[in-house]
Length: 163
Picture (cartoon, rainbow, N blue to C red):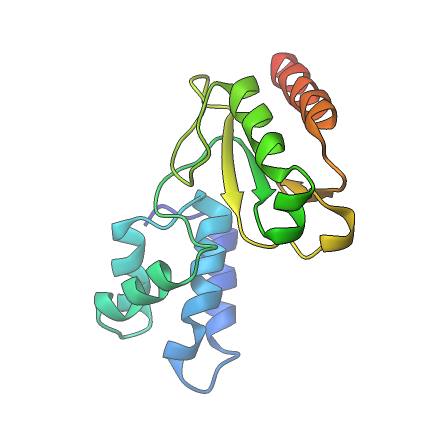
């Protein structure tokens, strides 16, 4: 595993917070995903060895929880809520706008041709009263209609050009 020294140190410290090593599996997976961006097969094997588990025990955790990614995503991660409130308020059209803007399809593994963006259609983002809701990286955006989706897309494209 090629993790940053700070991540390795954090992992060692996290393990000490649990009475049984295996209880730290979720926190270790989060730390690795924050560092690397996704959970690879070698990462699963590394966590299993670190916590004295069988790799299948870690794999079943990774595949059970939807917040863990098994493949790299774009530099920017756009999550569009598809639950009932957002769907009724235009969430599907909002998602289609992002897909069109970045020439991609919503899915946890698809990345725009320039490698910049992954658009994902997700379950509830917990802001039903301000539907449709979009999360870009860690920032929540409320009442995102097609016009606002286009505006956010333009902003992302502008920022990408500046790098």
